[in-house]
Length: 339
Ligand SMILES: [Fe+2]
Figure 1: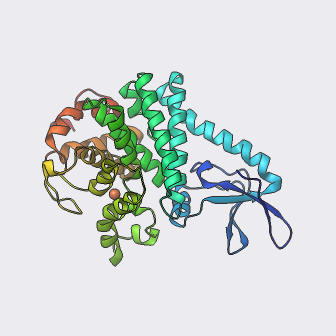
Figure 2: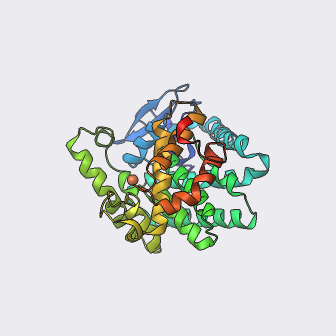
Figure 3: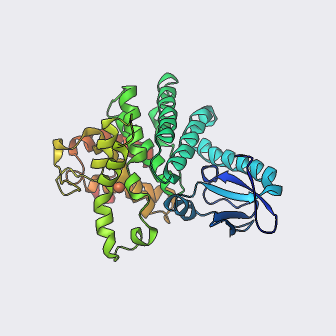
């Protein structure tokens, strides 16, 4: 938060608060404003919720700051702190009090992800900060020996693009631990690639993304992996592995994916992991109105159903039991008869 105070024509004073500090779906403690064309426009009233779609709208429009009246600043800062605690507590309830530091670290990453997405362009300074947080998190889970079952539970139930990126990163990390990957550098690259996998989609207007009838929809979807990898490749220090993950996260084992239609071993191994995690989290999202248990089981069934089609059967064989254990609360997938 900066101390820059801006005034409107009626001499009311406003202060900027970074969008990344706001949590989705929480009831606002004060009116919030956008600063557009030198004017302050009331965007939401006190008592309204800031829905996750609105956070995505800020990303799409490159809005990094929201404004509040200076008189409300102290109240807002206190409220932001409480909301952050509330979000952390929701996950801590799932994983246990002893992992509060792990959860705090993922919340720091989520805020940096939102900062990264809300920039007009991918900013190398912001990406570097994100990379530092990711490296710190991977080092933390390795030195503290955080169990993989805890990593699996670091998923958010909000559905903004930043939360989807976090979910895909944590599910990817869990999958890679199931596969026995233990190299910190590799895990860091995987995590970073998963966070940025849909970067090429961030600035596509919502009316295109949400309307499959829109003529531009197909092209925009087809283009987003290459668009994202091209943007990321311009940033110094983004590893080649991260760029490959972004480019190949929609390739499929049987060659029916895009943009290249690569098959089996032509697909980069880390991209295969992110592809599975991405399909999994999207399936959870598609079933979001179902009770928690059911939506996760529906997503797990997609992994079984598409085994050998979009997913590498070797990978599914190695991770299926662990995925059902973490998300389906059972050791083995139910047999086809009673599924
Ligand atoms: Fe994508």
